[in-house]
Amino acid sequence: MRNLPLHDQGDADTVADAERGFVAALTPGVVTTADGRVIWDADSYAFLHQECPPTAHPGLWRHARLCSRQGLYEVTEGVYQVRGLDLANMTLVEGDEGVVVIDPLGSTECARAALGLYRAHRGPRPVTGVIHTHSHVDHFGGVRGVTGGGVPIVAPAGFLEHVIAEHVHAGPATARRSVYANGTALDRDPSGQIGTGLGLALSTGTVSLIPPTVSVDRTGQEETIDGVRIVFQLTPGTAAPTGMNLHLPGPSALFLADNATRALHDVLGPRGAPVGDARAWSRHLDEAAALFAGRSDVALASHHWPTWGRDRIVALLSAHRDLYAYLHDQTLRLMNSGLTGTEIAEALRLPPELERAACTRGLHGTAVHTVKAVYQRYLGWYDGNPAHLWEHPPRESATRYVECLGGGAAVVAHARRYAEAGDLRFAAQLLNQAVFADEGNKEARDLLAEVYTRLGHAVESGAWRDCYLTGAKELVEGIAPAAPYAVPTEVLAAMSVEQVFDLIASRVNGPRAWRERLSVDWYLPDLGERHRTTLSNGALIHQATPPDEPADLTLKLTKAQLVGLLAGRNVEGVEREGDTTALKRLVAVLDPPLDGFAVVTP
Ligand SMILES: [Zn+2]
Image 1 (cartoon, rainbow, N blue to C red):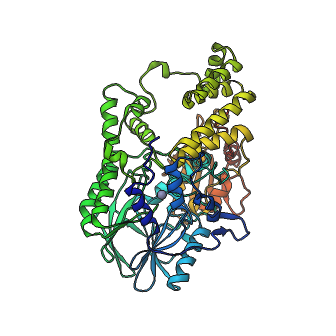
Image 2: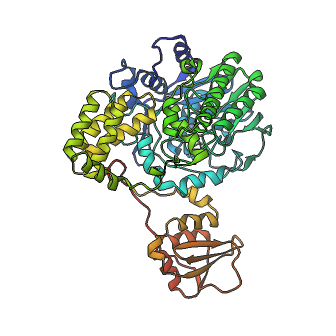
Image 3: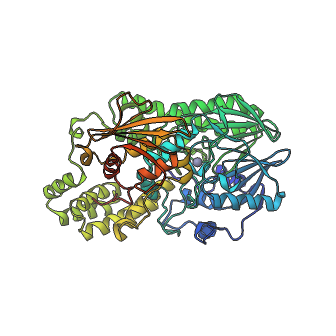
């Protein structure tokens, strides 16, 4: 829990950067869906203009206050940003005829509001192109709020594949964990949700997707859209598996996406994801400096606010470059001297200059989390200690620990002693055992909620705060009912048939399917594709080219019909040949989509 001096020079610069170029705010700062549901409420963060209360880390509070300065900003001539109307920024670059939008926010409603705010001050310019810097939803989900298509949609190679992977393979699990990592269920007040460190929150409107029409395949690739010249630099393995920076030679602006913002980001966020590569991240930033810093007067990003002046751009890039490299290399060094991820995270000290830098603070990602992610990338979850090779699962081990410690009441008493002495981390460990041993132990639940709340109020990372406070809330109130996770319609539409079968395979209830053996051929004449799925030993095997021996059932259908059938719906107009019970038997072994599962209780 590092503490930045309250009124240091770096901070004054930060405030000046966040305020510079302000044109106008959206008033009121509220965005709703067509049926009136509020999906963004910037005004609900007005309390951040108070002095920091004891219920928040001063660094996070100050940062959140700057993130709450929503509105339209002029970055440089012809380049604008709308900030504070979603987790990410929308950037607008004026061209010959209209305006090119970089990263159109996370939902169509917020994107429409942001574009409306821009147009109110810059005239009704048409959107002449869209650029998605990477595959996270806050950077593409709003695209239909700015265009219906028919303009270039530019994205890095592999964009669609990663969008789909993120929403499909781990969709329900990450959606549930996102409630924790983004604090979406928390009240917004001085002791509740005050921002994620990356921006205030993730909007909750309609997610859209238009498949890209221009793929960026290499660093140095140039495109001109509506007279705007753009040079791209690919940055895979950073916050997302695929991503890019871009340089605008016209306005001498360097766009850094999520790669160098005003906080430490994640190679692996608490929401869960495939782990990124901290060393690659560092190298991409060094390359960005070499390619573009000398030709840039301003650097801007998809979160937070721009940095003006070449020296300051170089300093920003160097600080992030050094930090990711340091976290990577020191983790390797200590890992190879025998330390585990948890031990490295505790032992690692940052160099004083990085410790002081305002732009790399752990306001969102943390050094502790990053070190463990680097360890995981190289060595996986197992720390090499055989005691951890085959542990009891949480409830079973908790029951035994609590028994050894003299029962639930004794554990709570021990925990209270640690909490009073300020060792909240160990108090949480103890109480977690008591709750997992007996979820009805109200004293343990209440004290654990209190400990999580104190931890949440003390930490600098907005994401960590959200995790702790959400844990506290669910201990006291239980899990709020949530709608079952659904893959956004346009993401589903963009999936290949093979990806649809990947999704279905992950919903096969293994034990229920053990004894089923069946094969179905799916013939999609409009796509000219034939696929076979075989259910064998509880695994749904997909073959893009069916073997010669006939399947139990052959279906002739469209992709939409295929999706409908696998969702268990009655679909008209499908030609069936063979054993029609095969389809029913397949659908019968699929698990329905999950709704909220327990996290802080067994
Ligand atoms: Zn982002």
